Structure formats: C-alpha cells, structure tokens
Image (cartoon, rainbow, N blue to C red; front, side, top):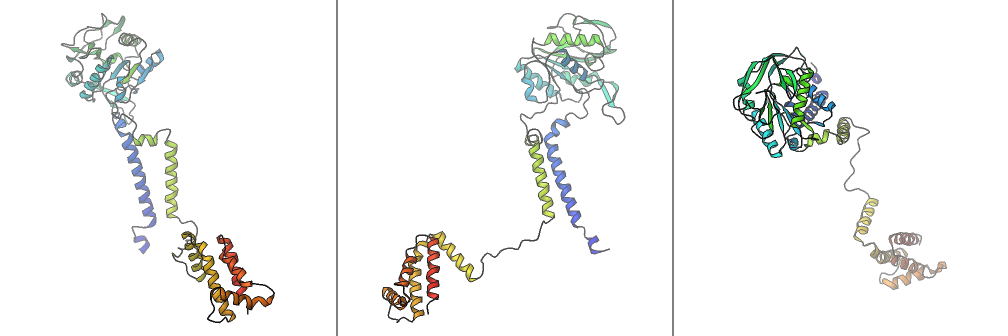
Length: 398
C-alpha cells in the first residue's frame, strides 16, 4: 500500500468532510427554525388540512366556497381574532392546550366550537395519505379531552336513527358519541339540537361537538349533515364575522425567528446569494488562481529608496519648506571645495568668492542666483527643480 493511499487525511477526504459538515450544519439550522411547527403536525390525521376520512379539509373547503371568510390559524397569538373559532381536536392533543384556548377565547368574548375525535386510524401501507379505521377511541380515553372544556363524560351509544338537527333531518352515525351528565343540556341552542351531541362548554359561548362524524370528510359527504353543520355555524357565528379554523397544535412563536427571516421571502434571494458567495470563497481557498505573490520587504534597500523614504517622512512632517536654505548652504560649501576656495571663507564671503571665480563665463552672480532661488522655493516642485539645476551647475564647474 502506497503512502498516499494509507493517508486517511487526503485532500479529497478533508474536502468531503468539510462539505458534509457545512451541509449538516445548514440543515440543522433550518430544522431548528421550522421543526416546532412541523413536528407538531406529525402523526395527526384529524386536522383541517387532512384529506382522510377523519380529516376536515372538505368542511373547510365548503366553508370557503359558501362565502364566509375562513382563516386557518397557525399561531397562538392569532386566537384573539374576532370570529367563530372551530377547534379540531385529535386524540394525541394535550388537554392543557384545550384549556388554554378556552381561557384565551373567554377573554376575547368570542364563540368557540370544539370538535372531539372519535376514530383511531392507522396508515394503509407506506402512504401517509391513506388511513384505515381500527376502531373508535374508548370513551374513557376521551374524557381527559372533554374535562378541561366542558362538564360530563363521553358515552358511546347506538345511533343510526333519524333526528332533527337545527331544522335539518339527519341520520345519526351507527356508533354515536355523546356527552352524558352535567353536559346533557340544550341551554343556548335551538330546540332539537340533539341531546348530548352538541353541548355547552364551561365558558360562556363555548360548545363541544362530541361526534365528529357529523363534520369530518366522511360525514360531510352526506348532504343533510353538511346542511346541519352549516346551520350550526350560522347559529354560533356573529353576522359578518369570519370563521377561524385551528387545532390545539398552534405555534407559540410571537414573531418570525431568525431562521424563518433568512429562508422566507423577501430575504430568501439575499440568503441564496450569500451562500453562493461563501461557496465560491471556499472553492477559491482550495484552488489558487495565478502565481503566488511574493511578500514585499517591510524596509526597502538601496540609496534611492532611502532618499525617497526620507523625503516622504519630511513631507508627512511638513518640513519640506525649511529644506531650501539648508540645501543652498550645503551646496555652497560643496562648490567652495570643488573650486578650491580658501578654508577661511564661509557664508556670504564664500558665495561672493564663488561668484567672482565663475564670473569669467559672462554671468554675474552665477552661483548666488541659483542658491537664492533654491532658498526661496515655495513648494516641493520648485524646490526639486531649482535644487537639481544648482547641483548640475556645480557639477559642471572645473
């Protein structure tokens, strides 16, 4: 086995590991943002969006087509909206959630209709959209759902009879769930509402439909049942108010969290752009483009560089203006040495001697004129030009 094959930290392995980690982290972030709402919907069949026999999608669709404004609530904070609230309860729901909804709606002073579950179902095959009934829930198991919202006990009785419900003649289900005891009353409902089928709750304006076969997809297939349930909605709903549809599995988030803000419109395009830019940066990190750039010296070498650095320091310090007289004095001493001036001469006397020494060329005060021009320079450009002219003049003297 070669050394390359034996190395577990090959480049491709490292790249694959990093890519998997990034993808897993991104998926975990998305799941953490959306999981509370999605997890609460798993395993639920008695819901307003379910197309199974025990679901209520048909009733919700009929409501919308019939005319009243119908809203499906997803957040707990929306429970205070005006309108009749219909809560579809599943056997797996928490009774405390039902009590909380009843208390919130009591403060809102709006009517509520709780629809209790009845049938225990199981998926047929691998499909989660097709379910089959495995029997009814034992009444004792449903008492915990009834207790926080209405008095009485659930009882399973023999149905199949015809009765008048809100002025509509309906055929009751063969296995009928009703509430017996203190809840066996018709107070607040029209005559003929059905004893124990629709009962008042513990809070005013709250009611419980104990048998869902009057409203679910299987029951609403009967035209008489559909008319009776629409009559119930008209009786409980205030004129003009919308119909609110909900389950006890409402999200507790009062506002959109960071994850939903990043992955929901209108910020989704920006998130995708940033992710794509990060991907390009990652690819760039593993693949170098062009030759490697050599690092420049912190301190450059050479006389020219030293002079330029010194000039830059003087420029930043604002001392360029004071260089003219000093440079003129330095060049005067240099010209005296070059022309062989007596050592005792200095200053103006040395300048006069240089002028006299070079005056034979037909130019009066040749040195002093150039030196004075350097000393009187007003800016950096003039200083540079005049200093260069003075230096060239001295170099040309013999």
